[in-house]
Amino acid sequence: MAKVNRFVSDDFTIRIAAVDATEVVKEMQKLHNAFPLATSGVGKAMVGALLLASQLKDKQQVGLLFRGNGALKSIYAEADYEGHVRAYTPNPQYQPPSYEGGLKLAEALGHGTLTVARHQPFQKQPFNGTVEIVSGEIGEDIAHYLHQSHQIRSIVALGIYIDQLGKVVKAGGVIIEVMPGVDEAVVERLQKNADHLKPSVSKILRDGGEPIDLVKPYMEGIPFSQVEHDHEVKYHCPCDEDRVIAALEILGEADLQDMIDKSEEPEIICQMCGKPYHFNVEQVSEIRERVHRNSLH
Ligand SMILES: [Zn+2]
Image (tube, rainbow, N blue to C red):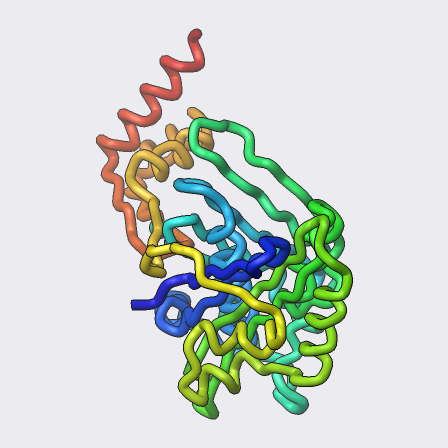
């Protein structure tokens, strides 16, 4: 059972999360029939969201929205503290002119912004922070966001390994956050470890490594221990008919009446999980009635 593993340095100034998210990224690839480039981008965003969400509290969630002027247009991934994750991209079958030199995510995403939204239960407005996309490789962008919006220095290493047939073999990542008040000698050690050992997430997971094996090379010489976080990572979409009806209501009375006149029976497919919602004319009429009634208040 895959879980986001959490750790903390013994002096409590470094917090760490690491995950092998292979199964959920495979599921996303299947669901969206995503080609390698989109799989890599969306997969990394999913891993990043899972890692960030694991550092929140019960029922809290985090959404990452990358919006660029490149062919992929946008990548969205959302995860909560309990390990639920879902994701979406409008152009999952995008193929670059060539795969030479690997998957060039930065080119496909282009210039733009990363918006991070944190939702808490019983709170209507999420906390939002937006930064420029600096690398387009997802991990560095998350680190840039943490620094700009929360003054937290971090290492965010994400890896998606895709085989010759374009299928996900391994996916995971590690985030190491340095808290204020840290001993600078510890930060130097961390940086030195990263520079010398150059740990590769994909390689460690391919060699059969566990989440803790993603952490060890960075933390060499810095004592740390595991923190309880016992939630299974799952692809989960909380969509339901009420939410789809709410989306239909936004269309407004005139558009709904138009559907009724043409006897259209809309089938709305959730973009996040592919679940279809079918409405017959009678149901559309009911929705139109309700929109009308609400407009009278
Ligand atoms: Zn859904």
